[in-house]
Image 1 (cartoon, rainbow, N blue to C red):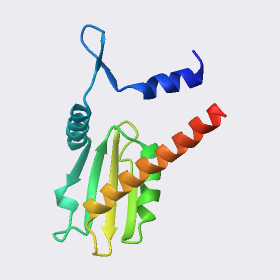
Image 2: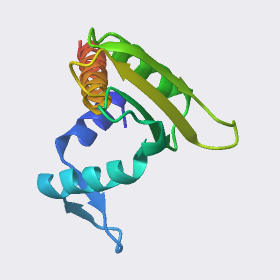
Image 3: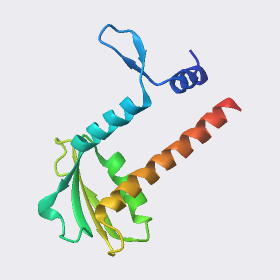
Length: 137
């Protein structure tokens, strides 16, 4: 199967493997609910490192490394409302990413993180679209 066929197949439908191994259509609402649940366990707000006004906050993201950390830090720092954003990996054998965000006060750190994640998704979609476009030409 060619690369174009694989991409077209992946984009054609949202499918999920069931216990029996058969493919089943997944409703968009179900996908959004699953994403929201996984996000709740994936990103933790560290309350001991968060200011009362919400302009400074630390987050811990599970099962991520420098790949997401550096890209997310870069995108968040592009926001003019963000004063500081940095990340660290506490230990190489732990799959944890610690992210610290400090804003100027017009938005909260949680809002800055949400905007950064949305902007990073948009950027990845644009790169994917350009890649698929070049494959098809």
